[in-house]
Image (cartoon, helix red, strand yellow):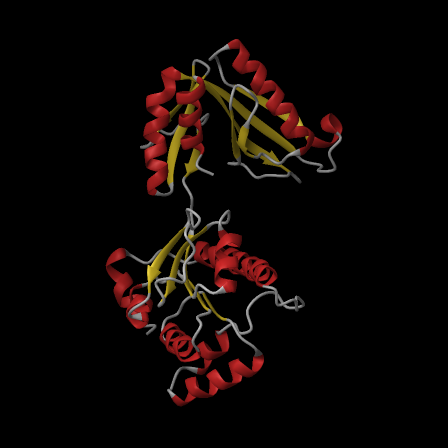
Length: 326
């Protein structure tokens, strides 16, 4: 969620807004630290800190604080079980802040950074208000870090047929940045979700060669030879996810051709075909899309975990790193 964009929108439209966030958590809790929601003066909100009684109570407190006007932030220590009757047995610390038009310039500045990608802020309480800075100053034992912006996984989707269209809609609210390719200029719908960019496919091998190494690749065009060419090019890269729509028999035919072309056996084995979660047999495009979206999320969590374990590759070494996997 773009927190600062929603805050800035509310300040421009309504003159006030509240920010509710999970500052700390222990035990079983519905959302982890960093989860936030923005509330307008009329009670409308964006985001969630976990729903249920906890969220209802915090929204009520935030609305009361907004009625009192811009004031000091509040930290609320909340036990979920005994205090709220929620099955979660954990405990959370919630931070609620109120803003008015005096904060619009700052909200717009953070919204601009948020639009450019992920960034972190150093935060501390000064006279009851949260002060945020991009560059951390002297270490403050009472301070904390906040991270904003959307960390979207790049996804190359080849094919704008029925399943491709359904998948783009399924991915609209999910953390993916979709580059959607088709060789037919009239194949795309009139409108696409904000996280999807439609592109006419003219040189598939060049698209694959220039893709970031952390890209996910899904191949589902209208043409089997085109599917094969794209998949073969992608197999020469070490993408964390490569999926090809089709049956087990299609996979067997493609595998034979890939072996004849001298592609590495381990890369061929890593190809996902058929795609989607096992056990879901319905071939309706919307069902396939839901199944594939769930599989992509599983793969994304695994890739994020492995990336956290690996040391970062210096920018100067990335091109050599990519070439070594081609």
